[in-house]
Image (cartoon, rainbow, N blue to C red; front, side, top):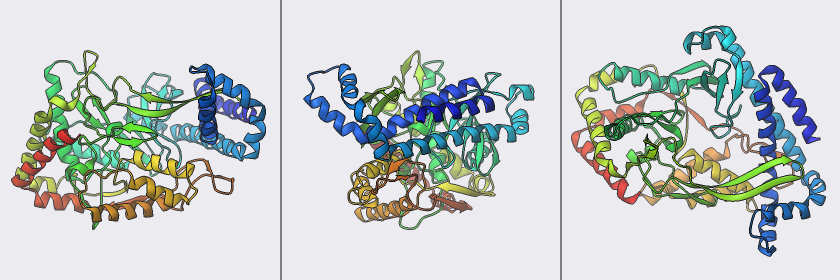
Length: 487
């Protein structure tokens, strides 16, 4: 039944997009079904492995062989079949949304992204997801028949556009250390963004230049109150660190919620436990922290799948600059980061009137996403709570979040305030997470409201610019240096 449904949907995608997209859809749906199945059986699998004399990949085929006779009946009886169908329908709707957005935005894409003609605005392929799920899908790279690649964001992208305008304004006034991705906002529901690649550095001197540019970026994101500036949201493109996800960088002023340089998420921090292993989330990454632990799945047909917890130690994350094939980590460049930060701060101190009148403060009316910690933390907490909801999902969320440190906050009272704020937001969150509820029925979300807030005027940035002085700059330079010790 599932394979027939996947084939049917794949044919529609083939006609709407391309054969490549149809093939990817078929692969992705099977992979997602595997992810739905795995949490239901992985405890059985590990118990089986402990009892098995096999210590290599043969253990997987042996396990499947013993389990496959009862797999089909358990799959249907447990409610997993209903969840798998919902996941197929969700992914199908996501692909069709991309196809419809291309048709709707074709004229804008032609004029803004350098296509030669409308004939070039035909889809050749799309990538696997580059983000956590939004209501209408994930961020993906769309490759057109002309080989042009553009990022599609299935959410409001006005924050990316506003950041791009801020960077242009600062560049026009001598701040050449900043660079941003061009963004096109078609409407409130989607946007298109220049695809930024992790390009290598050209010379030895470019290493220092990159980290001075990182220091400049760090100052401006601190000024506007940014959070969640983590390694997955920054791309090292030559000598520039480029911010590619801006939905959490413009913040309202929230009472009782502390904000500091560490709140940005960019500074090196101790690794945290996520997904069964340690993970570093910081945009500024130290050597030895570039790894995580993931659940690896493979699913080729209903009778054959492989599951394995595997430590993933990629050669380099995209936030790490590369020189002659080697990653250039931040360990030896703290002075360059501080130099870039102080240079930007001195410019701000000398040009407060200009900054007040600039794009940073003018005409801000944005939807911003609330995240007091890296969003990957919330995703991990939600999935952990769903898998262990014996005491209720919110109780499990609380327990999980309590065990993850908030490194930028020293006050235990403030930490409790943040935790209660987070739980309130998460209880109202809609995310397309597919799981079985306590009654064994398929469900798609928890809560009723997406946790976005609107920001009108940048009061947090205004306050920080008002308060800025050289003593503050010196203290923040010390905070940067200290993060390299504890990170």
